[in-house]
Image (cartoon, rainbow over all chains, first blue to last red; front, side, top):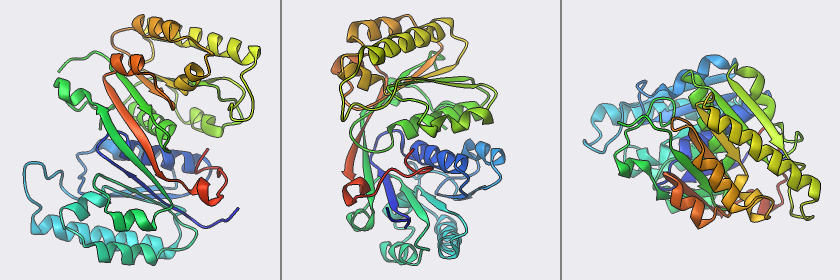
Length: 172
Length: 172
């Protein structure tokens, strides 16, 4: 059994990507590991940070202002994504956190807020023992190629199509 | 917006099903909800119960002795699954827990430890406000038909195929 860290990707259009990453984080924390969660695109409006105070070795940081369904990324969004990537790079290089989660990183790629080359460059610099978890739709093939574990979460049915709004404590 | 509870299914052969369910549980708990997690097939060997002491309103119970890759279910396994289903039924009917997770329920169905009809019957009896989360491979179509949200987690790549063993704090 090797002790190197692996790269996971949870992608696809189905519900469960960020949720699975948070589940991984909690499992790692319960096993005494330390976890950094960097959330691209997302803002503090997302109450996913509610779990942060429960754990001494968990840090969550957000690098955005929300989704781009109704608007294009602004220069401020793009700058926030770059600053976020640099923060993640430092944690990946340093290796203090045993798990680093890059939530919605692929959305930042999809909207060209970050280039594939700069993301791959950051991942190449990581400490070999750090477990890396990437989430978001539209994971590009080049990212899949360098990952060790990739799950594609396909939407078979979603209650949003029934008109159900995102619910606090269930969906966000 | 309706306040009724929905039925989620996380199925497929990819990593992330139980992990997503635990992520949902933690999100719900952080929002002040109470959660019951019933784990079919699994035994206490799974350290997924490590999160239980962190939350006042979380109960995890296990109804099995492990997986059936190398052996057939025994009468004791089958009895444990039935007793587990009855415990889950009581929680679903009572409605005290706002979220009830039936982890690996579909595996118990796949191995004919429970019948589809008895599972559907239990789900029909649930309190209308209870959110139900079902995980496991091989979700049958009849279960998908009554669910509100279904994600199929497809394995694109898995490091197990590289010979990596299941790791404490990451995979279990």
